[in-house]
Length: 101
Image 1: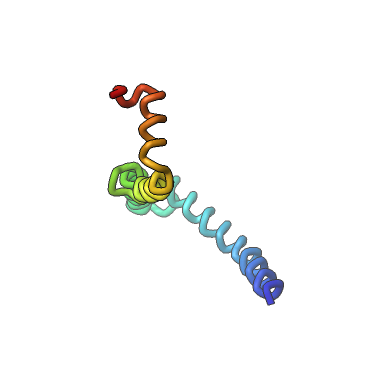
Image 2 (image 1 turned 90 degrees about the vertical axis):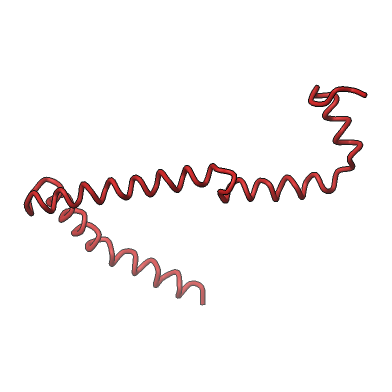
């Protein structure tokens, strides 16, 4: 069953190569101004919009509200929940993070 699905996926991937190449050639032709200056400027604007979207996504991922920070918080909370407070305090004192009492 899985072999059939894998074979179909590979076949679909191979079939899409000529179409992807054609789209790439067309986009390159447009980027060099072959379809007119208006199309070239539209492509430049589109490239800038995509770059801004990617940049914003990376910045969001690195904020406190981002998914990476949320996952790390969950992992650390689960990890520290299983460790006794006395052990955490002892390690913190050894590392100089907490003043000895």
